[in-house]
Length: 170
Length: 116
Length: 270
Image (tube, each protein chain N blue to C red):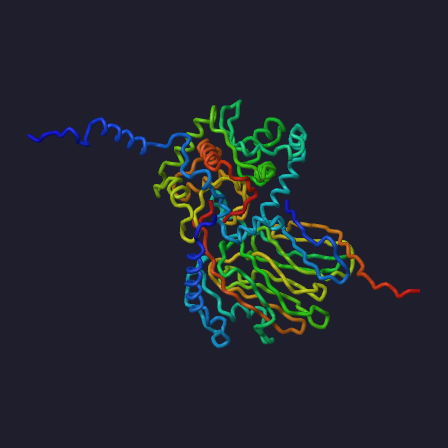
């Protein structure tokens, strides 16, 4: 018999999602990519949120960048920031003429922005990947894929990360 | 002592695109946390993990501190040939972990020739 | 002068009886009284959320299973001056089924209450003549996990009578006593408020049936002793040193309190 915790969790998730969307909505819109967060706290879980530009710039300079073809999947509400399951599907035939060469997982708030880089090729057959990442607090995650023609596609998702009740390390 | 677990479908036919699940035993210490006595644990993460088949690279991941401890990687491979699979990873301490698997790819069913 | 009516409800005798009842109700629980009845027992898994539940059930991806593989390997690895492995004396590890559910148990020789890790450590130094594995070391946890896992699915059945009785009573007393800067007793959260939220997490009943388990917050395997010491941190109480008998006494009380719950190790918890 499950204790009745879901409705409260859902309402917390809704509330946080609204707040998150309000504060980060402009991050994901094409119009306001240059928005800079004013927070200057640099603690691990309160670090400054990176802008979209900052997250993408190390990989995409002048190449074409489109928000399509990539489907990133993370829980909307992560129980624990130490191990958040992440999976992505990319629409690509994965043949010699057209395939995905690299996939980057980028964090908006972690101390280290790049979480992982994957190298694929036509031999992969499918550009679907799964792993488990660490997220230090509520943030957006970007999955950026480089196509064999040099262009980039991406997807982004916001994640609310709850902490365990006792936060220090016993 | 870094070991790993591998999950591959039991029967693979030529041309299949099959899923590989790899779970590596590694603390992936980020360098940000303290241990049970309050001492900062030095950073030690896997720098790269490469899968080769018959010597040719078929998968590579370069994780950072952002990947969880005991990392799990799931990826795909198109079955073209049988042979020796080698998973090899190196961490910040230059420790090399390896896992070998003998990949068997069965020939695809060819249609029977019409009667003689 | 007011007349004492013959059918007055007041009587000293009745007062004495009610006082006695009151004293009994407020005094410490007697040994066999359960705060959470047996049919209301719930494993920590029930309070863990869907992600953790699916991770525990995933035989491949459960991070605890790596340590389980290691433990099974260590079982058959010769070590120490004796050059024997656990297997040399105990046989196949499957013969350990049913052992862990009786722990903690009193060691006849030393009269101390041993948890499973203590028993393994003693076997290692005394019989295998090998070096001691430190508390919470990977090897000790791995072997403890491997032995406990053979009892997976079996109900907890700790013995609290005979030599164990005083340990059980001490454990129960600690569980019911407020301590630390937060002045909380284990019972305040885990008996009286389980299923309610502490920040964003639902409180569990504090059951021991999943140990040793993989704790996501620590990103590694953990023993019950480590978790109890961390509970002390949680209420800001002074943590006793590793190996302290109080931890074992509490463990014994917890095993009795969770009697009948199935062994779930390696569990996954936040």
